[in-house]
Length: 96
Image (cartoon, rainbow, N blue to C red; front, side):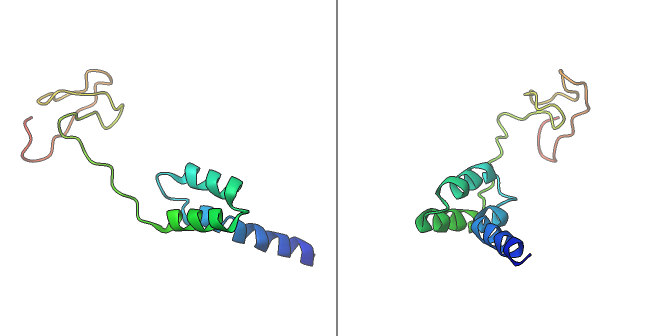
């Protein structure tokens, strides 16, 4: 029983960078780095630092808006999506 608990604790420690970075946008890359290079101390530290850093927000592109339902590109001034037909809501100050 002790060996099973020790194995679980070692696995949790080994995958600590993946556990910390599970909500990040680039989680699959952090997990792959942790899985394949985590056995090296440098790979584990790099994965942990990467998982601990803040995600930069994806910049919004007001020049290319898209439908919030189907992500089809739309033109400014449209009230309905040409692909799925959902009603488009524009923020204040943008042409509708």
